[in-house]
Every structure is written in structure tokens, then in C-alpha cells.
Amino acid sequence: MSPNRGRLARFAVTLLGEVVQSGFHFALNILLVRSLSQHDYGVFAIVFLAGGLALTYVRALAGVPISTFLPAHRDRRAGRAIDVTFGTGALTVSAVVGLGIAGFLVVADTVNPVAGGAFVMLWCLRSYLRLALYAKNLAGFATASDVTFALSGTALAFLLVHGDDAARTDGVFVALACAHAVGIATALLALREPIRLSLKASSWRRYHAIRRELGWSLVGVTTTNLQGQGQTLAMALLLGPDAYAPIAAALILFAPLRLGAAALVNMTQPEMGAQIGRGDRRGAIRLASLTAGLLLVGCTAYGVVLLAAMPLIETHFFAARFSGQDFGLIVLVLWAVVTVSLTYAPLRVLLEIAQEFRFLAALSAVAAVAGLAMVCGLLLTVPPAWSLLGLLVSELLILFGCAAVLRPGRAGAERPSVHVPPSCPPPPLAAPTPRVTRAHP
Image (cartoon, rainbow, N blue to C red; front, side, top):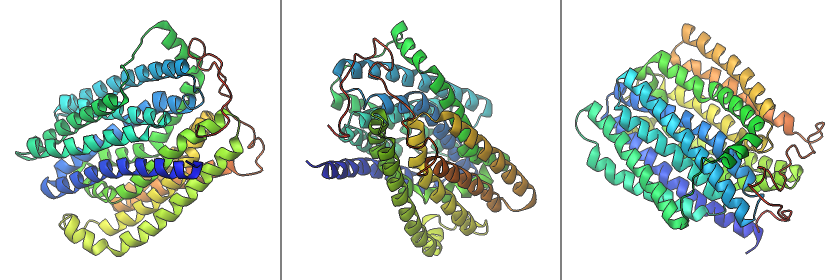
């Protein structure tokens, strides 16, 4: 099979998984918008947003490292060691964030803490497992996990989501937690490999070898969260569940865009990692730029159709639940925000793979300060819908910064910014391996 046909086949398989699980989330949210009170839907959306923030830390500490190092090490022993190290890291971080969410829910007294914490923990684990499977060029197994997650989630939602608003909210999180567990089990069974975890000193040495990069990665993730989802979470906490509900509902409309973008970026991330690993930064930049261009075109076309169909969407999708709440304006501004954020997504992923964490952290910090200042200022002076302009300004700063650092002709832009040596992470993680001569062996 030619490289282009192989890439297209992987994209189709990846997209199928994203469509299935995102379609499930989309349908579930529409059902909850129509059946829960505005307050309880807002509570559900805030917990879901907090879980999304938790995913970023698992991705930074385990997902990005395995996507970076595994494609560059084709030796079986080296790959197994990498798998054990970052799989253990993913489980540890997932457990910590799950317990953290559960503790917060105990204090907030809004959602069952066990259900909410288990949902976040298992979501994080399944997210890492999907990235690991993509790094191994096993997109089909990741898609099988997505399909079983969606099917079991649908069945469990019908069984568990009943009663009053609070009981239905708890039932949703129980159903989602169980569905993620089913998805994880499916992927592991399809992989037919024993589960290997290790807390031995050798595993910690491997993490210790990349401690500087991970430290900057954590700083970058934190500033990114403050710049992106953190601003949304701050708005949710300042406005309250009732005022946040229409914003959360509007975000549902962009699920098709996000699933397409996620499939495309997940497909290209291992290839960019392999290119950077062998020093082909120029090829990685070309691939990232092509991906960004495709996403910009897709977002623009999607937005035109979405805005034209807004009257129908408000009436039939949301049963006019948000009439008189500037819902059209919210959708318009969020379209711009999502378009910008998805356009720079592959550029940012490339910079993460290239370990440009200091630059990303500084850029995100500047964008976060500017965005938060504008959001807070607008919240004090205008209706909540207009405060979303602060998010747009923040996302534009990230786009311009990523484009500037990767532009052709920039000093140092053509150098390989990260060298993945045969023994990185250090022995006994990997023995010397041959240089990778093509992206898809």
C-alpha cells in the first residue's frame, strides 16, 4: 500500500472512532439540555469541563512522551520499556486527578463524588490508551475502543439515567465511567498483550531523564489551560451554572468540527514525531501547516452552514430553552474561537513534539493574562455573551505566536529542535536502534 493510501486508510479508521464517540457525546448533551433544568445541565457541563482539563495533564505527562519516543524506537524491547514507563505514569496521574475531582465534588456537594471522580479517572486512562495505540500505528484498536464505549454508554444511560434532575446527573456520570471502563477493556483485549506496569527505579530514571522537558510541559499545560479552558471554567464559576448553560450548549454544536480535527491531528502526530525524531523539521512543519490549512477551510465552511441553520437549531435542537439569552451571538463568537483554536492545534502539537515548551509556556501565559483581563472587564460592563471576545483575543495571540515561530526563514527554524537519541529515555529503556528512514514502515 502506498504511503498516501495508507495515510488515508488510517484517517478513515481514526475518523470513524471519533465520529462514534463524539456522536454519542453530542446526542447525550442534546438529551440532557432538553431534559435537565438549566441549573443541573450547567452543573453537568462544569464537571465535564473539569474532566477535560484533567485530560491535558495526562496527555502532557504520558500521551505526548509516548507519541514522541515510541515512533522513533521500533525495537521491540525498547518499545515495551517505553510502554511500561508511560503507561504507569498515565495510571498514576489519572488516579491523582480522579481523586482531586472527587474531593472537589465532596466540598461542592453537587454531584456524587465517587461517580464524578471515577468518570474523570477512567476518561483520562482511555484517552492515554488511544494515544498509545495511535503511536503504535494501531488505529483500528483505538476505534474498537471508541465503538464499544459509545454502545455501552448508550445502553447504560438508558438503564441508569432516571429520577429527578440530581439523580439523572449522577446516573450520567456512573454510565460514562462504566462505558470508559468497557472501552479500556476492549482495547486491551484486542491488543492481546499483558498489562505491564512498573514502579521500579528504572521507570523513574526514564522519567527523570526527561524531567526538564516534562517540567516545561507542565508549565505549558497549566498556562494553556489558563489561556483556554481555564478561562471558560472561570467564566462558569463566576457566572454560575445557569448562566454557563447556554455557553455549554452552544459548544455542543462544534462537536463535529472537534472530532474531525482530533482525528486529523491524532493521525498526523505520530508522523510528525517520527520526522522530528530523525531531524526532518522542515517536513514536520509542512505537514503541520497542511493540516492547519485543511482545518481552517473546514471550520469556515461549517460555520457558514451553522449560522444559516441557527433558527432551526434553536427551535428543534434546544427546544427554545435559551431564547432571549443572546444565544445567536454566543454561537457566532464561539465559532470564531473554535476556528482559531483548531487552526493552530497542529502547529502547537508540532511545537510540543519538538519540546519548545518554554516558548509555549511564555506564549500561553501572555495570552492567558490578556484574555482573562478582557473577559473580567467585559463581564463587569456588558452581557455575558460579549465576554467571549476575551477568549477570541487570547486564541488569536496563540495562533500568531505559533505561526511566527514556525514561519519559513526564521532564524533556527530549520534546525531539528529535539534529538531523540537511540537511548532516550536512557538505558535500560532502549538499546541503539536503526535510524528511521520512512514515516510508515
